[in-house]
Image (cartoon, rainbow, N blue to C red; front, side, top):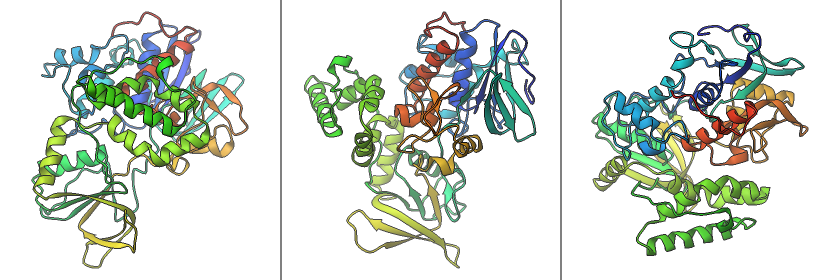
Length: 460
Protein backbone atom coordinates (compact mmCIF):
# COMPACT_ATOMS: atom_id res chain seq x y z
CA UNK A 1 0.00 0.00 0.00
CA UNK A 2 1.25 3.50 -0.69
CA UNK A 3 2.59 4.98 2.53
CA UNK A 4 2.34 1.77 4.56
CA UNK A 5 2.18 -1.98 4.23
CA UNK A 6 0.09 -4.85 5.42
CA UNK A 7 0.96 -8.54 5.57
CA UNK A 8 0.52 -10.42 2.33
CA UNK A 9 -3.01 -11.61 1.58
CA UNK A 10 -3.41 -15.25 2.68
CA UNK A 11 -2.47 -17.71 -0.09
CA UNK A 12 -0.52 -15.00 -1.93
CA UNK A 13 3.23 -15.08 -2.07
CA UNK A 14 4.85 -11.84 -0.98
CA UNK A 15 8.09 -10.47 -2.44
CA UNK A 16 9.83 -7.51 -0.82
CA UNK A 17 12.06 -5.28 -2.96
CA UNK A 18 14.45 -2.91 -1.19
CA UNK A 19 15.08 0.04 -3.48
CA UNK A 20 12.71 1.69 -5.94
CA UNK A 21 15.04 2.90 -8.66
CA UNK A 22 15.34 1.39 -12.12
CA UNK A 23 16.37 -2.07 -10.86
CA UNK A 24 13.55 -2.22 -8.32
CA UNK A 25 10.91 -1.01 -10.75
CA UNK A 26 11.99 -3.48 -13.44
CA UNK A 27 12.02 -6.28 -10.89
CA UNK A 28 8.49 -5.47 -9.74
CA UNK A 29 7.21 -5.15 -13.30
CA UNK A 30 8.58 -8.55 -14.28
CA UNK A 31 7.34 -10.26 -11.12
CA UNK A 32 3.83 -8.90 -11.42
CA UNK A 33 3.49 -9.19 -15.19
CA UNK A 34 4.62 -12.83 -15.13
CA UNK A 35 2.22 -13.78 -12.34
CA UNK A 36 -1.49 -14.08 -11.80
CA UNK A 37 -3.20 -12.65 -8.75
CA UNK A 38 -1.30 -15.05 -6.47
CA UNK A 39 1.65 -12.70 -5.90
CA UNK A 40 2.05 -9.30 -4.35
CA UNK A 41 5.09 -7.07 -4.15
CA UNK A 42 6.16 -4.43 -1.66
CA UNK A 43 8.79 -1.87 -2.64
CA UNK A 44 10.55 -0.07 0.20
CA UNK A 45 11.71 3.23 -1.23
CA UNK A 46 11.91 6.51 0.63
CA UNK A 47 11.26 8.64 -2.45
CA UNK A 48 7.82 9.38 -3.83
CA UNK A 49 8.64 8.29 -7.38
CA UNK A 50 9.35 4.69 -8.28
CA UNK A 51 11.66 3.94 -11.19
CA UNK A 52 13.67 7.14 -11.13
CA UNK A 53 16.42 6.55 -8.60
CA UNK A 54 19.32 8.96 -8.95
CA UNK A 55 19.92 8.46 -12.66
CA UNK A 56 16.42 9.18 -13.96
CA UNK A 57 15.24 11.79 -11.47
CA UNK A 58 16.66 14.64 -13.55
CA UNK A 59 14.36 17.11 -15.32
CA UNK A 60 17.14 18.58 -17.46
CA UNK A 61 16.34 17.94 -21.15
CA UNK A 62 20.08 17.97 -21.90
CA UNK A 63 20.66 14.87 -19.78
CA UNK A 64 20.23 12.21 -22.42
CA UNK A 65 20.16 8.44 -22.29
CA UNK A 66 23.36 6.97 -23.64
CA UNK A 67 21.39 4.19 -25.34
CA UNK A 68 18.96 4.41 -28.24
CA UNK A 69 15.21 4.13 -27.79
CA UNK A 70 15.25 0.78 -29.63
CA UNK A 71 17.33 -0.79 -26.85
CA UNK A 72 15.55 0.66 -23.82
CA UNK A 73 12.37 -1.38 -23.61
CA UNK A 74 11.73 -2.77 -20.13
CA UNK A 75 10.85 -6.13 -21.65
CA UNK A 76 13.32 -8.17 -23.74
CA UNK A 77 10.44 -9.98 -25.46
CA UNK A 78 8.78 -6.71 -26.54
CA UNK A 79 11.60 -4.53 -27.92
CA UNK A 80 9.30 -1.73 -29.12
CA UNK A 81 7.53 -1.29 -25.79
CA UNK A 82 9.34 1.97 -24.92
CA UNK A 83 8.91 3.40 -28.41
CA UNK A 84 5.20 2.67 -28.33
CA UNK A 85 4.97 4.37 -24.94
CA UNK A 86 6.64 7.47 -26.39
CA UNK A 87 4.33 7.48 -29.41
CA UNK A 88 1.24 7.14 -27.21
CA UNK A 89 2.27 10.33 -25.42
CA UNK A 90 3.06 12.31 -28.55
CA UNK A 91 6.79 12.37 -27.91
CA UNK A 92 8.67 12.71 -31.17
CA UNK A 93 11.40 10.07 -31.08
CA UNK A 94 12.23 7.29 -33.49
CA UNK A 95 14.00 4.05 -32.65
CA UNK A 96 17.45 5.63 -33.08
CA UNK A 97 16.78 8.64 -30.87
CA UNK A 98 18.43 9.38 -27.54
CA UNK A 99 15.69 10.80 -25.31
CA UNK A 100 16.23 12.57 -22.01
CA UNK A 101 16.60 10.54 -18.85
CA UNK A 102 13.71 12.21 -17.07
CA UNK A 103 11.34 10.91 -19.73
CA UNK A 104 12.72 7.43 -19.22
CA UNK A 105 12.15 7.70 -15.48
CA UNK A 106 8.51 8.48 -16.14
CA UNK A 107 8.32 5.45 -18.41
CA UNK A 108 9.67 3.18 -15.69
CA UNK A 109 7.19 4.60 -13.18
CA UNK A 110 4.31 4.03 -15.59
CA UNK A 111 5.11 0.34 -15.87
CA UNK A 112 3.81 -0.21 -12.35
CA UNK A 113 0.41 1.48 -12.83
CA UNK A 114 -1.57 -1.76 -13.44
CA UNK A 115 -0.75 -3.07 -9.97
CA UNK A 116 -0.80 0.03 -7.76
CA UNK A 117 -3.32 0.38 -4.99
CA UNK A 118 -4.72 3.50 -6.60
CA UNK A 119 -5.96 2.75 -10.10
CA UNK A 120 -4.51 -0.78 -10.25
CA UNK A 121 -5.29 -4.21 -8.86
CA UNK A 122 -3.64 -3.42 -5.51
CA UNK A 123 -0.88 -6.04 -5.61
CA UNK A 124 1.92 -3.47 -5.52
CA UNK A 125 2.64 -1.62 -2.27
CA UNK A 126 5.02 1.31 -1.96
CA UNK A 127 6.31 1.92 1.54
CA UNK A 128 8.07 5.27 1.89
CA UNK A 129 10.80 4.39 4.34
CA UNK A 130 14.40 3.22 4.65
CA UNK A 131 15.07 -0.46 5.22
CA UNK A 132 17.53 -0.91 8.08
CA UNK A 133 17.66 -4.69 8.53
CA UNK A 134 16.69 -7.89 6.76
CA UNK A 135 16.56 -11.10 8.80
CA UNK A 136 15.76 -14.57 7.52
CA UNK A 137 13.36 -16.58 9.66
CA UNK A 138 11.69 -19.95 9.36
CA UNK A 139 8.57 -18.16 8.14
CA UNK A 140 10.27 -15.99 5.53
CA UNK A 141 12.21 -12.77 5.83
CA UNK A 142 11.56 -9.79 8.12
CA UNK A 143 12.38 -6.22 7.16
CA UNK A 144 12.85 -3.60 9.85
CA UNK A 145 12.25 -0.05 8.63
CA UNK A 146 13.31 3.30 10.01
CA UNK A 147 9.67 4.23 10.70
CA UNK A 148 9.43 1.43 13.28
CA UNK A 149 7.52 -0.88 10.99
CA UNK A 150 8.36 -4.54 10.36
CA UNK A 151 7.31 -6.21 7.12
CA UNK A 152 7.33 -9.97 6.63
CA UNK A 153 7.76 -11.42 3.16
CA UNK A 154 8.53 -14.79 1.63
CA UNK A 155 11.65 -13.43 -0.11
CA UNK A 156 13.52 -10.16 -0.36
CA UNK A 157 15.41 -8.65 -3.28
CA UNK A 158 18.09 -6.01 -2.82
CA UNK A 159 17.85 -3.42 -5.59
CA UNK A 160 19.88 -0.73 -3.85
CA UNK A 161 21.76 0.44 -6.93
CA UNK A 162 25.25 1.90 -7.04
CA UNK A 163 27.19 2.55 -3.86
CA UNK A 164 28.05 6.19 -4.48
CA UNK A 165 28.76 9.01 -2.02
CA UNK A 166 25.78 11.25 -2.68
CA UNK A 167 27.09 13.95 -0.34
CA UNK A 168 30.87 14.33 -0.72
CA UNK A 169 32.81 16.27 1.86
CA UNK A 170 32.98 20.04 1.29
CA UNK A 171 34.23 21.92 -0.62
CA UNK A 172 33.32 19.37 -3.30
CA UNK A 173 29.81 19.26 -4.69
CA UNK A 174 28.15 15.96 -5.54
CA UNK A 175 27.84 14.68 -9.06
CA UNK A 176 24.04 14.81 -8.77
CA UNK A 177 24.01 18.51 -7.84
CA UNK A 178 23.44 20.27 -11.15
CA UNK A 179 23.01 23.83 -9.90
CA UNK A 180 25.24 26.05 -12.08
CA UNK A 181 27.45 28.66 -10.37
CA UNK A 182 25.85 32.07 -9.93
CA UNK A 183 28.79 33.72 -11.70
CA UNK A 184 28.77 32.67 -15.37
CA UNK A 185 32.50 33.39 -15.59
CA UNK A 186 33.45 31.20 -12.62
CA UNK A 187 36.18 28.61 -13.02
CA UNK A 188 34.65 25.15 -12.77
CA UNK A 189 36.56 21.93 -12.13
CA UNK A 190 34.91 18.57 -12.75
CA UNK A 191 36.66 15.55 -11.23
CA UNK A 192 36.02 12.69 -13.61
CA UNK A 193 35.66 12.55 -17.39
CA UNK A 194 32.84 10.04 -17.81
CA UNK A 195 29.18 10.38 -18.71
CA UNK A 196 28.35 12.34 -15.53
CA UNK A 197 30.87 14.96 -16.63
CA UNK A 198 29.14 15.11 -20.01
CA UNK A 199 25.84 15.90 -18.27
CA UNK A 200 27.40 18.65 -16.17
CA UNK A 201 29.05 20.29 -19.15
CA UNK A 202 25.70 20.22 -20.99
CA UNK A 203 23.98 21.88 -18.03
CA UNK A 204 26.67 24.55 -17.74
CA UNK A 205 26.62 25.40 -21.42
CA UNK A 206 22.82 25.55 -21.57
CA UNK A 207 22.86 27.91 -18.57
CA UNK A 208 25.12 30.25 -20.54
CA UNK A 209 28.28 29.54 -18.60
CA UNK A 210 31.23 31.42 -20.08
CA UNK A 211 34.06 30.57 -17.70
CA UNK A 212 36.68 27.85 -18.07
CA UNK A 213 35.74 24.24 -17.37
CA UNK A 214 38.57 21.92 -16.34
CA UNK A 215 37.81 18.19 -16.41
CA UNK A 216 40.38 15.84 -14.96
CA UNK A 217 40.95 12.14 -14.59
CA UNK A 218 44.00 9.94 -14.32
CA UNK A 219 43.96 8.95 -17.99
CA UNK A 220 41.94 11.84 -19.40
CA UNK A 221 39.74 9.46 -21.38
CA UNK A 222 36.35 10.58 -22.71
CA UNK A 223 33.39 8.38 -23.60
CA UNK A 224 33.38 7.60 -27.29
CA UNK A 225 30.59 8.79 -29.56
CA UNK A 226 27.65 6.65 -30.60
CA UNK A 227 27.33 5.89 -34.31
CA UNK A 228 25.59 3.27 -36.40
CA UNK A 229 26.40 -0.20 -35.17
CA UNK A 230 25.84 -3.63 -36.66
CA UNK A 231 26.96 -6.04 -33.93
CA UNK A 232 28.94 -9.02 -35.09
CA UNK A 233 27.27 -12.32 -34.33
CA UNK A 234 29.23 -14.38 -31.83
CA UNK A 235 28.53 -17.73 -30.25
CA UNK A 236 30.05 -19.13 -27.09
CA UNK A 237 32.47 -21.08 -29.25
CA UNK A 238 33.86 -17.82 -30.65
CA UNK A 239 34.70 -16.46 -27.19
CA UNK A 240 38.26 -17.19 -25.97
CA UNK A 241 37.06 -18.70 -22.71
CA UNK A 242 39.84 -19.47 -20.28
CA UNK A 243 42.12 -16.82 -21.76
CA UNK A 244 43.59 -14.04 -19.65
CA UNK A 245 42.90 -10.32 -19.93
CA UNK A 246 45.71 -9.67 -22.41
CA UNK A 247 44.56 -12.43 -24.74
CA UNK A 248 40.92 -11.36 -24.59
CA UNK A 249 41.78 -7.74 -25.32
CA UNK A 250 43.99 -8.76 -28.26
CA UNK A 251 41.13 -10.90 -29.57
CA UNK A 252 38.71 -7.98 -29.22
CA UNK A 253 41.05 -5.60 -31.08
CA UNK A 254 41.41 -8.17 -33.86
CA UNK A 255 37.62 -8.49 -34.00
CA UNK A 256 37.37 -4.70 -34.34
CA UNK A 257 39.87 -4.70 -37.21
CA UNK A 258 37.85 -7.37 -39.00
CA UNK A 259 34.67 -5.32 -38.56
CA UNK A 260 36.40 -2.22 -39.95
CA UNK A 261 37.77 -4.18 -42.91
CA UNK A 262 34.20 -5.15 -43.73
CA UNK A 263 33.08 -1.53 -43.76
CA UNK A 264 31.91 -1.32 -40.15
CA UNK A 265 33.50 0.13 -37.02
CA UNK A 266 34.93 -1.07 -33.73
CA UNK A 267 31.42 -0.57 -32.30
CA UNK A 268 30.30 -3.70 -34.13
CA UNK A 269 32.85 -5.73 -32.17
CA UNK A 270 32.14 -4.13 -28.79
CA UNK A 271 28.38 -4.51 -29.19
CA UNK A 272 28.78 -8.05 -30.46
CA UNK A 273 30.70 -9.18 -27.39
CA UNK A 274 28.25 -7.57 -24.97
CA UNK A 275 26.00 -10.64 -24.45
CA UNK A 276 29.08 -12.66 -23.50
CA UNK A 277 30.75 -10.27 -21.06
CA UNK A 278 29.32 -11.94 -17.95
CA UNK A 279 30.60 -15.33 -19.09
CA UNK A 280 34.08 -13.93 -19.70
CA UNK A 281 34.12 -12.17 -16.33
CA UNK A 282 32.94 -15.22 -14.41
CA UNK A 283 35.48 -17.46 -16.13
CA UNK A 284 38.38 -15.26 -15.01
CA UNK A 285 40.05 -16.09 -11.70
CA UNK A 286 40.33 -13.31 -9.14
CA UNK A 287 43.78 -12.18 -10.28
CA UNK A 288 42.60 -11.75 -13.89
CA UNK A 289 39.56 -9.76 -12.80
CA UNK A 290 41.85 -7.50 -10.76
CA UNK A 291 44.19 -7.15 -13.74
CA UNK A 292 41.27 -6.12 -15.94
CA UNK A 293 40.22 -3.44 -13.44
CA UNK A 294 43.77 -2.06 -13.27
CA UNK A 295 44.65 -2.06 -16.94
CA UNK A 296 41.65 -2.45 -19.21
CA UNK A 297 38.42 -1.41 -17.46
CA UNK A 298 38.80 2.32 -18.22
CA UNK A 299 39.31 1.60 -21.93
CA UNK A 300 36.41 -0.83 -22.02
CA UNK A 301 34.08 1.63 -20.29
CA UNK A 302 34.63 4.50 -22.75
CA UNK A 303 33.95 2.21 -25.71
CA UNK A 304 31.09 0.29 -24.11
CA UNK A 305 29.25 3.25 -22.50
CA UNK A 306 29.20 5.88 -25.24
CA UNK A 307 27.71 9.37 -25.43
CA UNK A 308 24.97 10.47 -27.83
CA UNK A 309 26.10 12.37 -30.95
CA UNK A 310 24.53 15.65 -29.80
CA UNK A 311 26.43 15.45 -26.50
CA UNK A 312 29.66 14.60 -28.29
CA UNK A 313 29.21 17.61 -30.57
CA UNK A 314 28.82 19.98 -27.60
CA UNK A 315 31.90 18.57 -25.90
CA UNK A 316 33.89 18.90 -29.12
CA UNK A 317 32.80 22.49 -29.71
CA UNK A 318 33.56 23.59 -26.15
CA UNK A 319 36.99 21.96 -26.41
CA UNK A 320 37.72 23.56 -29.80
CA UNK A 321 37.08 27.06 -28.49
CA UNK A 322 39.25 26.42 -25.44
CA UNK A 323 36.54 26.69 -22.80
CA UNK A 324 36.64 22.99 -21.94
CA UNK A 325 39.99 21.47 -21.06
CA UNK A 326 40.66 17.79 -20.37
CA UNK A 327 43.56 17.19 -18.04
CA UNK A 328 45.31 13.91 -17.24
CA UNK A 329 45.83 14.18 -13.50
CA UNK A 330 44.81 12.51 -10.27
CA UNK A 331 42.88 14.49 -7.68
CA UNK A 332 44.45 14.41 -4.21
CA UNK A 333 42.49 16.86 -2.08
CA UNK A 334 40.82 20.27 -2.05
CA UNK A 335 40.62 23.03 0.56
CA UNK A 336 38.59 26.19 0.84
CA UNK A 337 40.57 29.43 0.84
CA UNK A 338 39.76 32.55 2.88
CA UNK A 339 38.76 34.36 -0.31
CA UNK A 340 36.04 31.76 -0.97
CA UNK A 341 37.81 30.01 -3.79
CA UNK A 342 38.88 26.35 -3.77
CA UNK A 343 42.44 25.10 -4.11
CA UNK A 344 42.97 21.62 -5.52
CA UNK A 345 46.08 19.49 -5.29
CA UNK A 346 46.70 17.30 -8.34
CA UNK A 347 49.29 14.78 -9.46
CA UNK A 348 49.95 14.90 -13.19
CA UNK A 349 49.91 11.64 -15.11
CA UNK A 350 53.64 12.11 -15.73
CA UNK A 351 54.29 12.24 -11.98
CA UNK A 352 56.32 14.82 -10.15
CA UNK A 353 55.34 17.13 -7.33
CA UNK A 354 51.68 17.98 -6.72
CA UNK A 355 50.30 20.77 -8.89
CA UNK A 356 47.92 23.47 -7.73
CA UNK A 357 44.67 24.44 -9.44
CA UNK A 358 42.35 27.16 -8.15
CA UNK A 359 38.63 27.10 -8.92
CA UNK A 360 35.35 28.60 -7.81
CA UNK A 361 33.24 25.49 -8.18
CA UNK A 362 34.36 21.83 -7.90
CA UNK A 363 32.08 18.93 -8.84
CA UNK A 364 32.86 15.33 -7.93
CA UNK A 365 31.89 13.16 -10.90
CA UNK A 366 33.99 10.13 -10.11
CA UNK A 367 30.80 8.11 -10.02
CA UNK A 368 30.98 4.46 -9.00
CA UNK A 369 33.68 3.89 -6.42
CA UNK A 370 35.23 0.69 -5.18
CA UNK A 371 34.35 1.65 -1.63
CA UNK A 372 31.15 -0.33 -1.58
CA UNK A 373 30.98 -1.00 2.15
CA UNK A 374 31.47 2.61 3.22
CA UNK A 375 29.01 4.06 0.69
CA UNK A 376 26.44 1.25 0.83
CA UNK A 377 22.85 1.67 1.99
CA UNK A 378 22.07 1.07 5.69
CA UNK A 379 20.55 -2.36 5.07
CA UNK A 380 23.56 -3.56 3.06
CA UNK A 381 25.97 -2.31 5.72
CA UNK A 382 23.95 -4.13 8.37
CA UNK A 383 23.93 -7.38 6.38
CA UNK A 384 27.69 -7.23 5.97
CA UNK A 385 28.28 -6.35 9.62
CA UNK A 386 26.20 -9.32 10.80
CA UNK A 387 27.77 -11.69 8.30
CA UNK A 388 24.48 -12.34 6.49
CA UNK A 389 26.13 -11.01 3.32
CA UNK A 390 29.64 -10.25 2.15
CA UNK A 391 31.30 -8.20 -0.54
CA UNK A 392 32.81 -9.95 -3.52
CA UNK A 393 36.59 -10.36 -3.41
CA UNK A 394 37.16 -7.08 -5.29
CA UNK A 395 34.56 -5.15 -3.24
CA UNK A 396 32.60 -4.13 -6.33
CA UNK A 397 29.31 -5.22 -4.82
CA UNK A 398 27.64 -7.97 -2.87
CA UNK A 399 28.87 -11.49 -3.44
CA UNK A 400 26.12 -13.46 -5.13
CA UNK A 401 25.66 -16.64 -7.09
CA UNK A 402 25.17 -16.26 -10.86
CA UNK A 403 21.43 -16.66 -10.23
CA UNK A 404 21.40 -13.65 -7.86
CA UNK A 405 21.32 -15.34 -4.44
CA UNK A 406 23.23 -13.54 -1.71
CA UNK A 407 26.25 -15.29 -0.17
CA UNK A 408 26.99 -14.90 3.54
CA UNK A 409 30.34 -14.30 5.24
CA UNK A 410 30.83 -18.04 5.80
CA UNK A 411 29.91 -18.95 2.22
CA UNK A 412 26.32 -19.93 2.84
CA UNK A 413 23.92 -19.32 -0.04
CA UNK A 414 20.65 -17.69 0.93
CA UNK A 415 17.38 -19.24 -0.19
CA UNK A 416 15.38 -16.10 0.53
CA UNK A 417 17.60 -13.10 -0.17
CA UNK A 418 18.64 -11.96 -3.65
CA UNK A 419 20.54 -9.00 -5.09
CA UNK A 420 20.11 -7.48 -8.55
CA UNK A 421 21.47 -4.69 -10.68
CA UNK A 422 24.59 -2.75 -9.70
CA UNK A 423 24.37 -4.16 -6.16
CA UNK A 424 25.61 -7.47 -7.62
CA UNK A 425 28.19 -6.00 -9.97
CA UNK A 426 31.10 -8.06 -8.67
CA UNK A 427 29.49 -11.29 -9.83
CA UNK A 428 28.34 -10.18 -13.27
CA UNK A 429 30.32 -6.98 -14.02
CA UNK A 430 28.09 -5.78 -16.90
CA UNK A 431 24.96 -5.11 -14.86
CA UNK A 432 24.68 -1.32 -14.82
CA UNK A 433 22.74 -0.72 -18.06
CA UNK A 434 19.02 -1.23 -18.63
CA UNK A 435 19.38 -3.98 -21.29
CA UNK A 436 21.39 -6.06 -18.82
CA UNK A 437 19.21 -5.36 -15.79
CA UNK A 438 15.95 -6.10 -17.62
CA UNK A 439 17.26 -9.53 -18.63
CA UNK A 440 18.45 -10.28 -15.11
CA UNK A 441 15.13 -9.24 -13.56
CA UNK A 442 13.09 -11.19 -16.11
CA UNK A 443 15.15 -14.32 -15.44
CA UNK A 444 14.89 -13.97 -11.66
CA UNK A 445 11.15 -13.35 -11.85
CA UNK A 446 10.80 -16.57 -13.79
CA UNK A 447 12.82 -18.52 -11.23
CA UNK A 448 10.79 -17.11 -8.37
CA UNK A 449 7.64 -18.15 -10.18
CA UNK A 450 9.05 -21.69 -10.48
CA UNK A 451 9.52 -21.49 -14.24
CA UNK A 452 12.24 -20.79 -16.80
CA UNK A 453 11.22 -17.16 -17.04
CA UNK A 454 9.52 -17.60 -20.40
CA UNK A 455 5.95 -17.32 -19.17
CA UNK A 456 3.50 -15.43 -21.30
CA UNK A 457 3.55 -11.88 -20.05
CA UNK A 458 0.55 -9.70 -19.40
CA UNK A 459 0.66 -6.62 -21.59
CA UNK A 460 1.27 -3.35 -19.75
